[in-house]
Image (cartoon, one colour):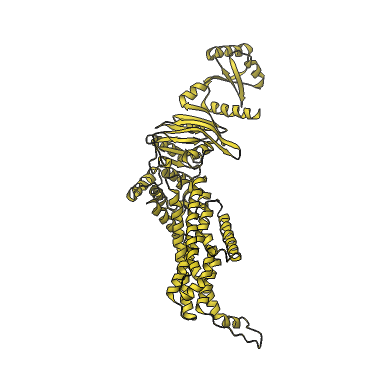
Length: 306
Length: 257
């Protein structure tokens, strides 16, 4: 669908986006994941043509020449409208700008207002809209010309739980109609709606692939333990076992990342018994995407310090 | 048609802001101020305390054409300021607020975007100037004597070319910065500099756009268009086209956000 080739964007000698290459295949829902300042918005804006890459190209795959904007719907992070218009007027205006006939524009505007759930407010001035309503109107304007690719910048981050649920459901529907690329810094949203993730950090893509793939690639067995008293005392002793890769302490839990989970479980339990450690909690599990997210971010944060 | 969509939206926006009402009213005010104060000056002087005892003050009634030119010169200062004020945010403001992000991510041609906005503002401003000068003509006719309506129309038309030039500068500046106030500053500064240059080198710059108003008095009196005025107008029109072209190209190369 859309291919990004070696895209780099430099602001005042600082690379906001560093040499990223990826391909967006049709019919997929891809989450652009990363902490704040990772370069997600810049990447989306470059695809939308609002920013020009310092080097590299954005290409439309299906032989589509000419104006790439015809095929793209874009929702900015904080959509701004002509506040003196009503919601319906704005949608009609945007539809007309996309070369849709007058009657068709009217019809589409009505339909979309209904679909995103702000039909009641269609004749109200946009200046009177709440943040959630603006976000919905933003989604409606992005999809009005039936784009093949929808770019959504933080579509749910600013919404309340109900709005968030509605928009996620809407995105689920939209997946059937177009390719979705949306950015988020909330891992849960990425896990929920997307087929693939692109994990960005400091302007570079550090991990990509389908959710299962990424999960599998980074899945590590871990055993979580909790003892009475100070955890630090046990940390060193546990790390001495050969199957332990590393440990970390979060709150009152000690997470032990292990290579051979069966052996580790037996040995650890046996050891706890033998040494009479005051065990409170014992759990065998696997790392989640969140652990991966934190790991990637931390690793790279470490690199910066070195 | 996309161009018409943008044009209509701009006109609707001006209507919602009551620009179609207040801009013509302001221009009428500017235009009738001088004819009225000139006519009533003796009475005004008297009622505000008048002249010292014994002083005689014989005020000749100025010819109608001169009074009409006062309206135009009023327009040249205050009117131009109002024009720069109402156009300073048309693109810069949309880019600053972020609406341009939504609009220009749609398949909108930059040429349509710039020229439709330009045309919409011209419609508003030319209408305002026309009614303003019409009001001026009415009062001049009433208070000072006959003045040919045809000559007034021709003068207004040539003055309109100059006003379109002012508007085009403002539109061009709109594409260079996102700050409306700065657009205003640049527009006014450029006009002032042009004015100074063309009056200092007046014999060299007969065709400068800012020279157009200086040809108008004789046009108003005789109805004859001087060759210099023709050339100045032609040169101004070429400059306007270049400014529009420059604005479109600048916007194309600029990042919208």
